[in-house]
Length: 322
Image 1 (cartoon, rainbow, N blue to C red):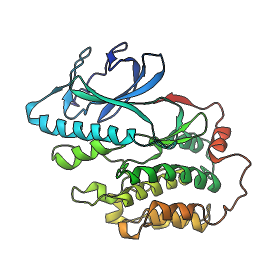
Image 2: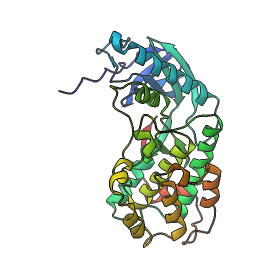
Image 3: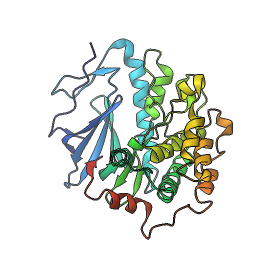
């Protein structure tokens, strides 16, 4: 029998001067709400609420944590708070903006700008359903990930890692901006410190070092996930999970198939990012950016930007999210 998830805050709950409108999403480590500030401006608020450590009854404000889990809960809470502090210092169009973060109700809340549009994963699924030979064109992939890498470089310069880059965590706004969402600092602390916590990673997008409690994490870990996300934009699906590859690596055949559709320069770039050995991956995000802007795309560039091309293909497709 699966454990009951903690109940989200009900609509009209006021926290830190913000009024909750509704729940937007929920994951293993938190709940995201649409809320409004004192001036009526919409914001997204992420609440630290790890489902494996805390419970909460409907209508309640305070999470309930068992005594034996309290130290781990507080460790994740501190990491989540520090993540908010660090992100609040970053101002870049490709990184979600943290407007405020505060402690209340024995947890922490992170206030972010509210985005309208759809995730990159949404666009990939739609393209896959259209049975396009190329999910995205080469020029679109190069332009899109150049934009994402610009934001990620700022994150790394602030001594932070993302640790959960995947198409579902890249948001394409209605004004054609790519924004990185859902940083994984609190998730990583809980995974590393708690023996009874199931490691949180996304198969296919997670590097092999994230599967191990002793694996060294660094910028190279995000580079692997960037390569996996580019691969998904080419094929419509994630690459073979890293733990399976360590036992029986089947990616060689997949790269050969990709080379029938995309130029060798792009396929080799993705292949380098997805090396199981971190030392064989591109040495830095800057080096990867140079490769992205290297040889001209095989097809001529359209007169509009990469994200506008996506929006043009899927006109009318979109949703709101925080």
